[in-house]
Length: 220
Image (cartoon, rainbow, N blue to C red; front, side):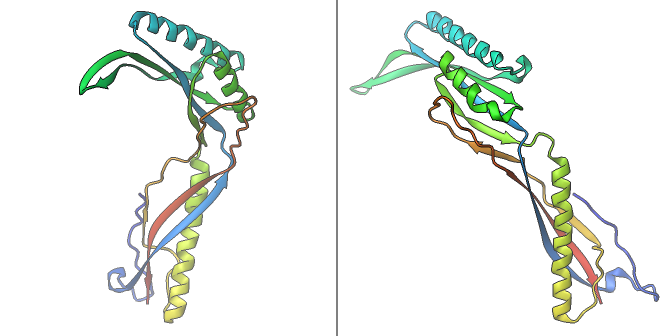
């Protein structure tokens, strides 16, 4: 939140508290290309023998990780997002019948070479990954873009206040006496994938960075 102090204007030392106020909402939008993709995929195995099922999942997951590493992704960019073991049941005649376990090992892969996202997904699938939850495209260091959108939001607020002052035949100060910044949201774009096919086409497109402020202007 940005808070500006109250100002006094005029040769007669007129108090800002006695002047009229106009409050407007200003918004700014900037489009920018993402620089990072977050791929979420993993290995799901099902069976009755838990120990053997864990070994099977671990073996397949290891192959998947090796395949991702072979495509040039640094090891530090591959993290376990979740690992779950869930008992599975059938219901017959109102009774719960145990049928086995379901093990899910979900990985999160950070990729900066966006043109290779589809190839990385295909390699992982070919190595045994059987669930691809999706791809999130983000701008990792979006502060500079957000600041640009914030400046655009201020210009938008000033333009609105000036338009209102002209319609009402009043004189308005272009510098606001207060600005309240709406908290920004994380900038990302999402691609949901249900099935990968070689080579899976992934188009990152552009992301929209937005800023919004409430600005108060004095007038006479």
